[in-house]
Length: 334
Ligand code: TXA
Ligand code: MG
Image 1 (cartoon, rainbow, N blue to C red):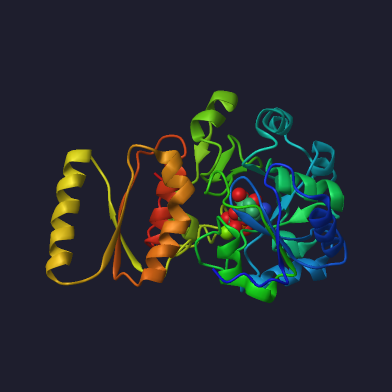
Image 2: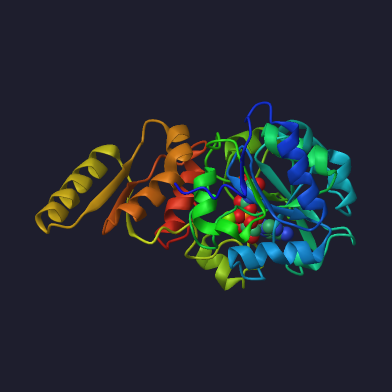
């Protein structure tokens, strides 16, 4: 991987060096862009209360203006300063799951620029737990707006090399702390609906949320979201997290899937087409951690098609299924 020496700095993932963190904090405070690791994926950060800085995120990613950003905070007090009419469940969820991979959608306070929320009345908030993200928030002393640090529509970056690949010198500084521990993005939970609704499954499982909240709905299929004109979930674009290569999905009882997969592999071998296989039904955590890197590797290898066996829809498996279905251009979240 070609790291441009000027804008990539190595930092220790557990005890990040303060010089690097301070340099990044200065950039953020002066309206620049910093890519940094979180426990889920790398984020592309900017000062969340500086509209010009936030616009740079959209430009760097080629992200359409209608897709709102997550704001990262390092305290519940900072979160509350960005929100209004805080729902009763907010405290309980923050206490249980923050810092961690849970994003809470609440009504926004007046200080949050329209650039961050794409003109919406709500804002998505999350307190990350990766030591580098935590240190950066503490040093910068500001809320950081940060989407995943990939070019729009590409798989999310799980290492600094992916960020370089997609954004190169469009970002002022990249903090490289190695691969991210979870590998898929945070769970986005809409608290403005009752019961709360998962808009995007992610690092905090449906089961874990249900244990705390009793009932949590899962937002319907992409088709439904599109039919509702994206009002429920702006991120549910049909083709998302997409590698360049075509994807074929295999789902169902393990014996059936094994038979179908074998038949398809044989067919592709005979036709002389190069293909990749993603099959990890045993360990969904590992599947999540390696998913985006593998999609990028198959792209780079120039395979004609990627055959993916969906993991069971339990725990983080639900998030892996969601990303694979979106990558394949199909969107329900089961
Ligand atoms: O793990 C993560 O969440 C990573 C790291 C960097 O924190 N961030 C991330 O951001 O995945 P992004 O922008 O790639 O995805 C944010 C998702 C999008 O689907 C977006 O539409 C949704 O959150 N979102 C943001 N603000 C929202 C809002 N006000 N209402 C509903 N959905 C919102
Ligand atoms: Mg993203």
